[in-house]
Image 1 (spheres, rainbow, N blue to C red):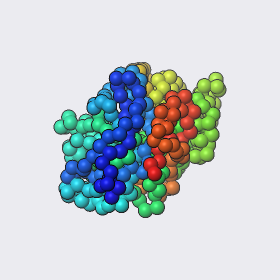
Image 2 (spheres, one colour):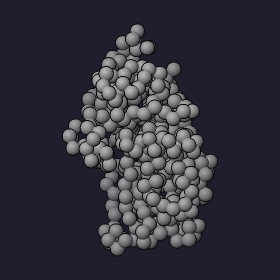
Image 3 (cartoon, helix red, strand yellow):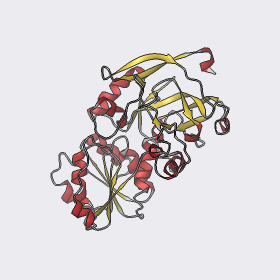
Image 4 (cartoon, rainbow, N blue to C red):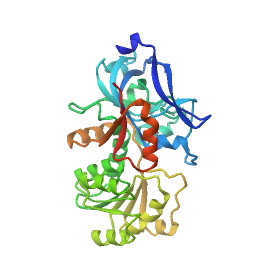
Length: 354
């Protein structure tokens, strides 16, 4: 194994003292009994990684400092811990994994809601409170890890283990019937996957974004109609016309409060759904009378648990749904962040480790 001869590795670490990234040399960790040591093949950037650099009131907590960023990756097992869960993995397995660790994985909250609400209160998130995945090796919890389906490319799979699981459940948790209308708000890193999942589930899809390149991506992924809500002043009216009165569900993948404020106007009155996925810096404002009178419903969908990870990944493999990934070197993570902040990125951006 590569890490036996090597004791240190490179890592892109966020330092709160200067609010910047530093490419540091740090020790390669050793797996505990419930963990597997993975050589990272691809780590991809998610919008919540960028939130570390911004003031926010949405509960994003930094733990150790400096901390390796990144919570979306795929890689190859190089060593397994001695526990029963870890020993199911063998050297050379291509795997993906989720970032919640130190939780029990067994309480009702862990099994059915999210590991963040584990009854132990001890949950930590790799990439935020513990070292994440923009480093050459990482120890991950075996219970939140799975072997990739046969034929899935380990170099491309990384975004499926946050963006993919999130987008899949954001779409499927709307519980629409084939032929119903869905608006996907934000057609970038999450949304371009959301469009693919929605089309594979048989929905009619409207893509909404503020950049033309994201809308081009949505069209490539199969969106039936796309509108630029920044440029087209009549976009809401056009959505109502195309859908004959509004969409059955609007799934918001953006971090824009304005897009949340604008969404109810395009939802079909009575039983239409606003699905909350993206997290703006500011708190959302909802009209209590609209909710009380059933003008529309509000639901949330999170980035998944080890229990709902497999259906998302297996659906992706079955329908050949993969992220459109632009690749970079580890040294270029600051450039990736800059592109994400300036809305110039298409699809997902990731580091491929040689």
